[in-house]
Length: 190
Image 1 (cartoon, rainbow, N blue to C red):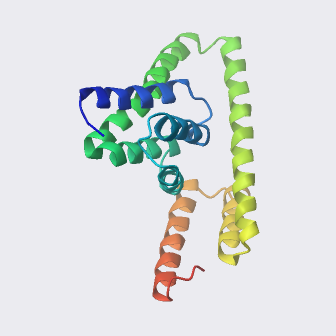
Image 2 (cartoon, helix red, strand yellow; image 1 turned 90 degrees about the vertical axis):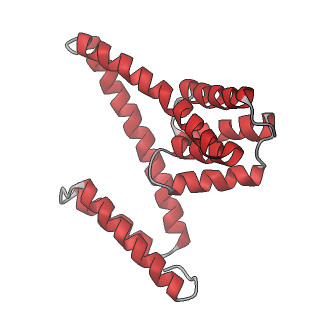
């Protein structure tokens, strides 16, 4: 595949429009990326897209941004990754800038407060759905360590008010130690 200015403009326009017109985060954006980059442009194979989605989901950060970086890098190296990240991050950055300007102007408006409250409720529902579905996947695997970590993390935050950053750091350390242990034991996961 030829990587000329038109190719890079198409990559930027694709990531920009996907980011600008997709609501719901990475879980919604990944299938749309597959339609665009696998089905329409044929830049990736379906298996590559599945691998990219898995890596993007397991990496820290926003899934959509991670996937865009990986896709850009896969199809055009470092320039592609940079173009993809700019295309993906620019729409929310512009939108949030505009919203914050108007929020400051209308922060005392009852209608604005009602809309923001409604958005909080909707975001809470989406997060609860994701947590429940991901939690059920952990329980289905019947591995005692992830289940214990999940339950203790929930209790630490919700019952004892432990700072979430501390929980993330502890969970990261547990994950690193578990990975090291499993590599030394011949690849078995704890």
